[in-house]
Every structure is written in C-alpha cells, then in structure tokens.
Length: 314
Image 1 (cartoon, helix red, strand yellow):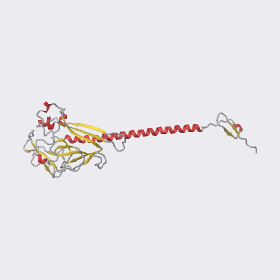
Image 2: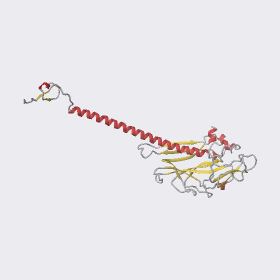
Image 3: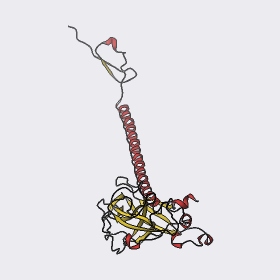
Image 4: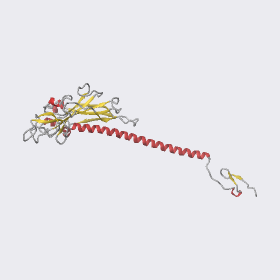
C-alpha cells in the first residue's frame, strides 16, 4: 500500500489540508473569528434595539391607558353631578306660574341639611344646592372631609320618583278640578311609606319625591382604598330623619373644591331677584393616576354647572 501524501497549501485564503494532491488548488471558503464576532455584535445590537422599541411601546400603552382611566373617572364624577343637580329645582311643569323661578340666574339655597323637611314645611320653594363646611355637623358622621356639596332634589312622580318610602312633596291645597299652581303656592313635605299619590291630592295635581344628597371627599389615609376618594350619601328612607353612611362614589379623586360663585349678571338683571339664587356652582378636583402609572401627574378638572333653565335661556 502506497503511503498517502498530505499536502498543505494556501491559495488566496486560509490554509487548507488536502489528502489528494490533485485538489491542492481547491479553495474552501469560511469565516474568520473576527468576522463571527462582528456578526454576533450586530445581531445583539439589533435585538437590543428591538427590546428597547418594545419597552417604549409598552410604556406608551401604559401611559395612554392611565390617561384614559383618569378621563373616565373624571367623566363619571361630572356626569353624576350633572344628573344630580338637574333635579335640584322645582320641576318646570310645576313652575309655569312662577315667573321668578323661571328667570332665576343661579341656584337656589336649599333648606338646612340637618333640619327634617317637615320642619320647614310648607314653603313656596324647595330644592337647591349649597356648599357646606363639614365641621361639627350634628347630623353627619365626623370624618376628615373639608367641604361638602349638598343637593336637595325634587323628583316628579310617578315617572321619576320610584316607589320606595321617603319624603313626598305636594301643593297646599291639592284638590279641585284644575291645579292652580302659582309663584305663591305653598308646598308641604311629609314622609310616606310609598310614593303613591298623597291622600289629600285629587287626580291631576302634581306631587313628587324630595331627596337630599351629599358629596364629600376623604383622604387616602382614612379611606379603605388607600387613595383619596369622593363619597356619596343620602337621607335614609326610614321615617326618622337620619343620613346614611357614606359610600365610595369614585376612587382617586383629590383636592375636592366645590364652591358657589356670584353670577356674572348686571345689577339691573338682579333687581327683584333673591341674591341667594344668584349663585353658580363651580366644581374643582384632581384625578390622581393609578398606582402602576409612574411619572404621570394628576388630571385637574374645573367645571361650571348652570341651572337647566338658565342654561336654556342663555
């Protein structure tokens, strides 16, 4: 057996070992170690850029979601208040003979928050809005709230008042063939076990439910949610006049600042108008971001709320 000669040649490239002398000039292509390192470095750079872009997208989506959440909570509060104050006046159908009620430029002041409605009954006007200082109110459980938005509503029966027990408002007198409602008509409020037509009222005469609401804030340290909250409470449906325990309306609401401001109308327009009704409601608050939205600031909201009739009249 003839020995095999191993020829080592180098032809325009790396050294190649061949057992066949005839293949000495065959060129075998390959990558050097430096080239492999460069390729790996480029691949790692591309992966790093991809990961960075993905992280930026995730961060942008988180911020967008947090901003959307703040907007949703702000709209929830404003929508609730708008619906609540829309009923804070005598119904328009009842006020057709009351010129002053139709032309009042602002909100009426309601009856005292801690006084049962029967105590002030009868009266020419019911319903209204007021901002009260939440310090040592005898009828409200003590908390850390500073200001409360107090709303006295009139809900027309039978379509809007439900059937549960509560305070019924009706005119005095409330009998006859045709209701004669004027600006001097007196309205009485009594508690009933249901919202049926009051016994002293004839068919065709109006009646409704009188309901009182209170919106207050609570600090994060005092709330079970661990964040500032806006709370809601109402008068109990029982015959004894008591306020129910407050419940969370929307969490993450801070710097709650309701206030009554004078209407920007001339003194001539106010002639003959009770100055207590020449007030507009401004609601200010901050919506804090969710816990996972780091670096996102509070969303500050200020809203001016006009009476429905004043808004309709421009």
